[in-house]
Image 1 (cartoon, rainbow, N blue to C red):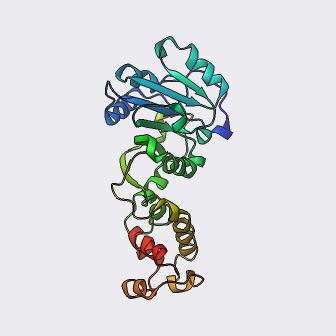
Image 2: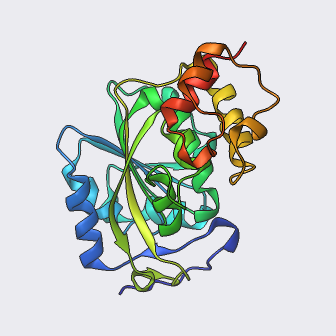
Image 3: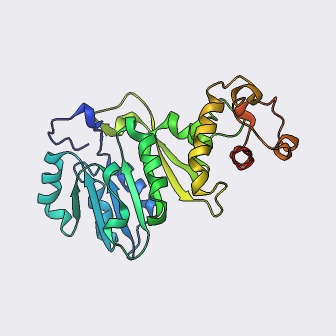
Length: 258
């Protein structure tokens, strides 16, 4: 474990990955190719960056900590790396002017996991695959099966656009400083056929949120403020609870709004 001194900032949720075996496992999972362009969110001290950069055509690193930006820029092993000083949530991938979709890897502050996922949805046209490290509990909610305790709003809303897969779980011991929770590396890719059109996504998101605000209640009650056409009422039993409805069924409800 390599522990270089750094004044860790709680507001940025900094936990560095420095276990060499795990870093190699991540690179093997990413399978970087010579024609790939990679964007790394939260490059930290560059431990993972150093392992990816030699294998790809181009690599960018977004880092919010000015001290780490300086460290990345001065690292002789990262020659050719483009470093972006700033917040990933303020970055528009379209402005980077790449010819093809990019691949994304991120070891992010866990308190902005949801924001990062919705940023991925907003930037959907400009990336090919995304791998994000997050709290294991959140990862399990993302991939949860219908009707299970973990199945909820984030499962349904993200399923409108994204396929999600847990690559592997990560123990706290491989981070420095050590977090209090287990982590997971989650792979995101785009679904081939969207279940809801872009112009209806906001309504979809709001309806799912409303439905899960009363998780143990029937959707007849939680969605009582909505007016649906008779066709969808024949297809969907409104005495069901939200945790039993698939993302496609929620999409059908939105499409049937009067």
